[in-house]
Amino acid sequence: MTLKSEWLSDINDMHYKFGATEWVEDMYRSKNYKILNDFLAFRLDFLEEEFEETQAAFLNKDHKEVVDGLIDLIVIAIGTLDLFKCDADVAWDKIHHSNMTKEPGANKSRKNPFGLPDMVKPKGWKSPNITKEDCGMLFDIFESEKERLQTLREKRDLDNELKNNIVNSQYE
Image (cartoon, rainbow, N blue to C red):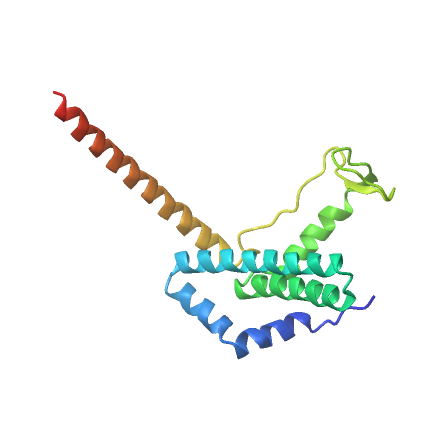
């Protein structure tokens, strides 16, 4: 199997054509991290939708739609990495290297009707060292979302405390 090396470039061209790259960059520059977090959730839902369509094509034995679906999954996955400025090449190399340090073996937690070896983590195996730099915008988006959610939790706790104080004062 040969892969077309222009995949990322093709996806990037598509993002520019439809304004996605500029929109994400504008949202990031404006620190609209909540919107970007929601956009990432949308992209993940999009992957799930395409996966379900590909499964349906498999069940219908529609070879063309299976290929179309698998390519769509790749486009969305690579496109998401591209839009969020993740260093997919560096992350790929780290993950591939880590996977290659695994050994052939059996994963007893799932059935393997084909007898092919599973990728088993040997003793001392180390997960890939994905850095925040490899993750592009995602670090800033997630840190902002963690802070926003913490603020919401604290506000909810404060509201609950206030409500409890009001209720308790009625019985004094």
